[in-house]
Image 1 (spheres, rainbow, N blue to C red):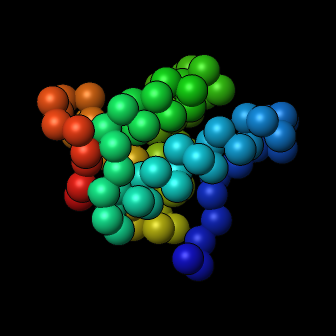
Image 2 (image 1 turned 180 degrees about the horizontal axis):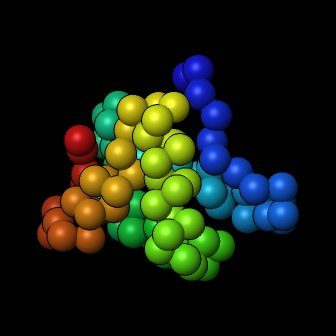
Image 3 (image 1 turned 180 degrees about the vertical axis):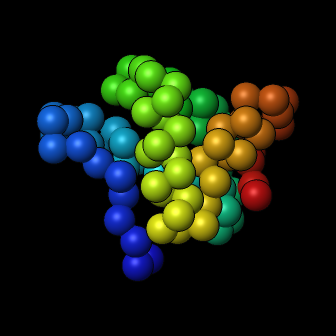
Length: 88
């Protein structure tokens, strides 16, 4: 892992932990598999920290640029899937 997570200085420690957890699950979806419910739950928490769709797009784009992993596609697959796990 040679990339950084998109984080804000104004976020609390708990918020930073939640954001990193979300991006870790995105990584896991690409590298192996992850429980669908874990992604959905982490994304909902992410949205409480980053409620703006435009800001979400910025953070997703920053993460994808540095990691090549698409948070958008992982979340979309998790929300549309009925399976227990997500794998990209």
